Image 1 (tube, rainbow, N blue to C red):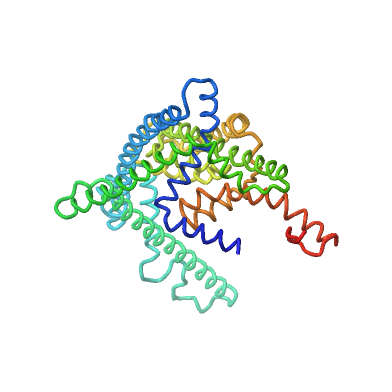
Image 2 (cartoon, helix red, strand yellow; image 1 turned 30 degrees about the vertical axis):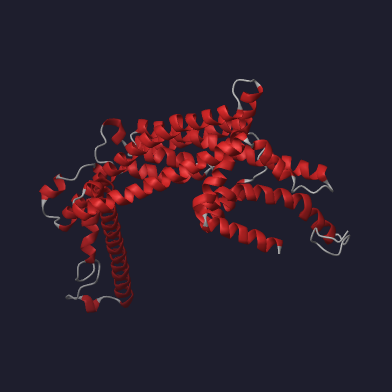
Length: 429
């Protein structure tokens, strides 16, 4: 019944997530900023209310305003990149459809796109109807060949036909992928860049949709600030309310467990999120330096991936591909060694910054959360409940692990040794 009650509470919270997400976010922020609030009030600089108002103002001025401006530039960069990608692919496809027109090939910008065009034109010929290359043609003297030589010739013809068929299939698949990418890139650019300035009903619908989205965001933001102010100013009452649920029997043990939970959650949330923010700024600057397209989009994205160590390495091949496909690259940025080693170097520098500077100084070894646990909890929470699940996943995983090591596993070990009859840590006594 207790488990069912918890499931019902979580389900109800998910259904009213418009309120519960700001509530949980405000509680999390009050928890994260509590050391700062305690330090400021202890020195007598400000009261709790003044400190809470100051934190809200600082977040708005130092985080939300730059974030809004940066998001605007990121949208502009994304629109430009999508438009350029759509244009380059369309020029390549037009040249592939008319391979005998040298003017279309001259319009292609960038050696990478020209190489892709030449490869498609060369291997697309195998898809045309007719006798496959390498097939033995009837002619004079064929009947006089030995049986073994004729069989070898036929086998070689079939192998060549299979090779040509595979190359034709690869070329067809490549063209299909390029067509799909061109259509989607064009759609993204059109949606982000033209929908808001469309005419008639489309413009009205875009304005209404944007207004509702901004309104929902502002409402959630104001609600979060409201809850944060009361949680932060009344943090002592919040702790007093939570202490009512601590059993009197074994209170010392429970307080020790709660301190472990606090160390694990605070170490991960405060530490890892700070590391992700620093890595996002570093990667944005690094991507801008090496000439990667849309650095204001890719930099924060890779920085957020540092939430789970070694996951940002998955973006290295993507960044290499994006550098290779740039049609306006010039000088050393168009050389193969720069295209390959620049993204690799950015990742290595970011990983060194994380492993040897940020993690030891900011996060330390107090999380008690292994990487498989973090990865599983994040994916499961996000898949089950979106943002609501992500807010709960890692803290819940940390608490469940500590509870399991304190209560469940010792009882299971005793059950395995035959010291108790029931493996569950529940007994009448």
